Length: 252
Image 1 (cartoon, rainbow, N blue to C red):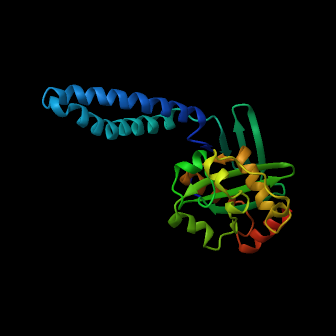
Image 2: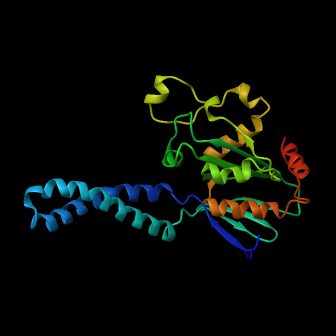
Image 3: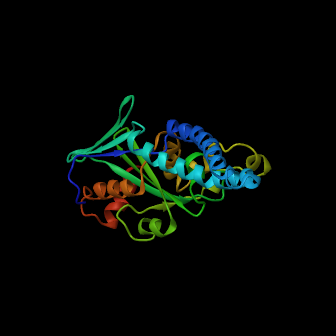
């Protein structure tokens, strides 16, 4: 890790407020784009102005929305942040401090991943490719738990999941906890109740952590997730697979 501390990582870049504004902006952008294109083309090709306006308003409107959305992400953060310090890290929400881990005390971690396919996706998970993966990590110290995660394409995900890293990412399968049938497919996507037998199984602790991710996880951009993991790894004694195994067992 080469960046100088302290570092503030802004979580949840596509927060609810931003998505609502983008949705409204999309409607406005299409209407404005249609009228502008029709005004320009109407004077040259009046017979085709409606058809051409409809055809050109869509890409023009999407371009406008994309530009404004990128700008909003820079100037309108969610208010949920993770602060990285020399002595530890702190998670904060608009309501105040949400968790703290200090490196001079015992702590443990879990790391897991799953592919975004085979189950009814919703929210942020639905806005990325089904071929992508969600990677997550939970840090625990005493009764405090902090979950961070990100979404990565297969080529970048394998850097964590296929290589022997100190974290030892464990694979879980979302289809194992979602009901199958036409009702699930036709209805709105909702998080399931994880069956007791799965929670009691060998990967039960990962499913408990995943359920916590649903409720209070901090989504990071891919670059910030990498920075976070490198920061945590730099404070793991030995940085070896053996250390990873010890950390995973400690959380039990």
